[in-house]
Image (cartoon, rainbow, N blue to C red; front, side, top):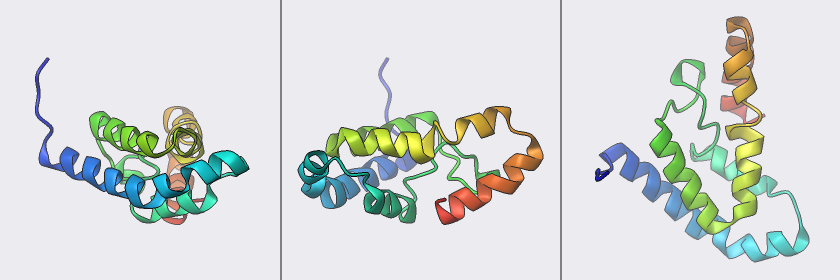
Length: 120
């Protein structure tokens, strides 16, 4: 299948690429050697809008499509696989999907906007 990325997808890809180049790649080896949780990088991912990717706009997330999500994760993984796994588990999928898929509307309204806004 041949397709072209739309402008929004290209923007997300470029933003994630630049983030990885500046904020992840220079520190990736050190993170691996120290086996430390990349807390500061996750905070920065959140501050630039590259976190909580699975959350729809109605709950405070970016509401991006699956391909944009994949493009972002691909670029973060290019920087450091450990950051990607931590980011995905911490705020992109493992922590949020159960709430998105199985939570009540009240729970979604209560927790998701706070998670997306504050990164907690």
